[in-house]
Image 1 (cartoon, rainbow, N blue to C red):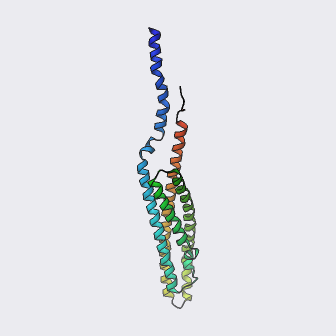
Image 2 (cartoon, rainbow, N blue to C red; image 1 turned 180 degrees about the horizontal axis):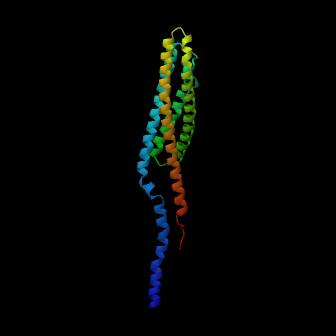
Image 3 (cartoon, one colour; image 1 turned 60 degrees about the horizontal axis):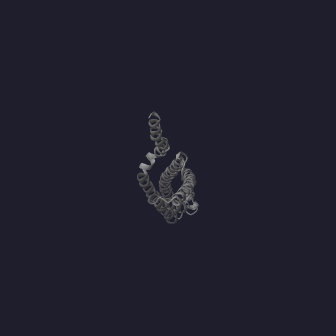
Length: 209
């Protein structure tokens, strides 16, 4: 009788040994799984801001180019950023990364999410290059006001220089915001990969007898 009870106890205790790995697997990334919908919403919102940043930088570049041709100050250092073409190719990169971020937030396809992460890394690099160009432009602008006295209309030169500095400063703020968004999306991607790798390590073997 005692051996029969011990057999039942051992038979009843066997399933507990299989429950432990399953609990570990569910608890490793449970908070991240619960907030999956929220994370997708954040990704779409960040993508929309990226697109808006790109459009605004492109619009500011158009204003800067219009100021160049209207003022007839061709090849003036005030328009260094415009000569580099950053308002065009920077805006194209930011709009592309934002579009991929929105697409990645609407689907769970791993390949699309990976492409979005790669494009955001490239976009972050472009943002860093743009920040360098814009800072150089601001330094040049502050030093170029002295040369306005050499022009026939120094007041026009000062006005153009001040307007150019304002447009470049707005581009710098938008580019810094774009860089912060790119870093946030890259961190979200890295956290998701870390969570997936933990789940793979903590998952129990398929055949446990």
